[in-house]
Length: 348
Image (tube, rainbow, N blue to C red):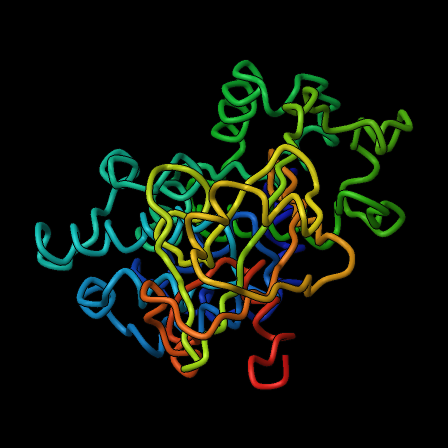
């Protein structure tokens, strides 16, 4: 088909030089694909190199402590990806003797591997002709064929997957899948696509009908929830503080944080100190000062965190057991990681 042949030819002329494209090793391909979910290629590249150096095989990743994996993942966000990565590495190592399943149907059964990732591994590592559908593919197909079905609807997901399967080049599925994703990333971009230099422009419905800015269609997003976080950054006279691991299924599971008081609005110092949580934590006399003069707004997919860091100094606190000199050893959310880069416990 002209569409498929044109994309593959374009890809061979324009593809970026990326390390995971130089291997058929399913472990390396899996690592890269998990990292690339909701992360830019430039950022993923550094983490990919770091992970493959520290964990050159799936056995090495499986043997690592989850805390170590989360610490190395710090900054990539969406930490459930890292936890699932570690879980699946242990499963493949212990139950499958380190051998990856070689088909889409088997790969998709693994924790943390969905339709896209299973298709990517199956086609890139094992040359199975199964089509990948990611954000780039949705955009290319929607524009080229003029499809107005919402890409984040149940109908749209099925429709685009079915169409993608009819287009894949069965003789070279890896090249085709890489081609259509790469084309969406650097040619048919979300904004300011390079339509004037596009090899498909003459047959692209969106270009011919001035619909580039209107496609693809997405259903309205879930309403964003506002949350108000007050982190208590404790400094004792013997240079200790408190970090605790977040439990449960909410954000940042398995990461560490300072004591947190969540409120329904921004708190001033008096309101914070009058809270029961503060009183329970600090029975002795303390001094307290706000580190960031304006609240930090940390945006997640469905919630915005309005955050204040309060520096709390006290001579002694029995629950403060972590040395400030060891704090970098703990995996923390990027929000706290950024704070720690700016905060010097010796001068504050």
